[in-house]
Image (cartoon, rainbow, N blue to C red):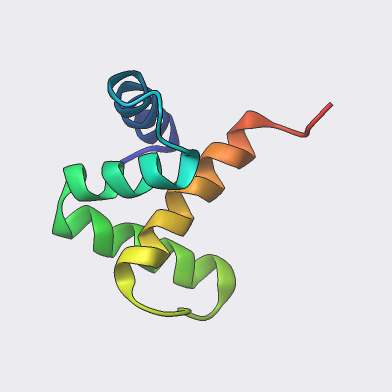
Length: 76
């Protein structure tokens, strides 16, 4: 899954659940995409950090948030 596809998934989930915060939406996206994507995202976190802090699910959520915040750009 490309970063752009991940952003679209996140945006669609946010439209469905506007009251949730970013981390909750990221967790929802990881759940929706399934076990294989969760492991893929967790492995990307491992590659970025050089270590895996905790379980695969939180690491996958961290990856989703990192992609979103990186593509969002610097705060003004």
